[in-house]
Length: 261
Image 1 (cartoon, helix red, strand yellow):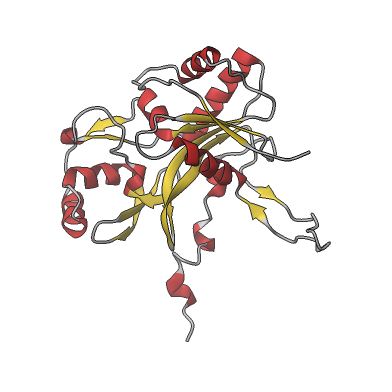
Image 2 (spheres, one colour):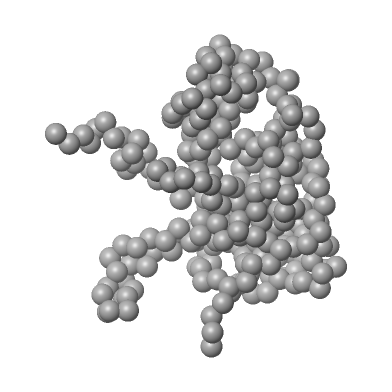
């Protein structure tokens, strides 16, 4: 039998506002399209609509600007209000460039501008959307509600577009997970030549998030939620923090300690 994976858009999702019930909106849109969840489906949701529903939209003009934000503004060329919003979401500043401001967020993510997004946010040019406060919890709550409403235990991934060290361009990344193991360790399996794999951890949650992004897009596609059908993964407990490499094991951040003579 030929293997295949389907990526299915949940159609006609309206613009999301604070307080909206995302699960009810998804199920209503699916019903109108004669679309139902099937066993082993995965639901991937854009972080922007999760944050909007949870009230994560901020007007930069309402922020109090610190001296540190003003200094970062001069170094990066970003508006001081945006620098302040980034600092408010950051545990620490990782790198500063002429434009980029890389930080570690409260979620443990190393990303540009703390994941703050200007795109697809209604309001003035000063309105931005923050990352959800606890994406793993948000994913878990939606998975439980879907199970209660449909009887299906559907894993949920909350997806954000992020850049990668030493690679050009952004890809979909899993920042919130519920119902599947984010890392699939293939150690102990044999390859086509019979060689037994000794490590081979696969970031399956990130792979699913990236696959979903191909359909969801980054501009005016208007597809903030998709169903992935036919993918191989392991159901179980897990969260997105598992995908964050421990700082002490990060050779790039600790490069000064590993200089070769």
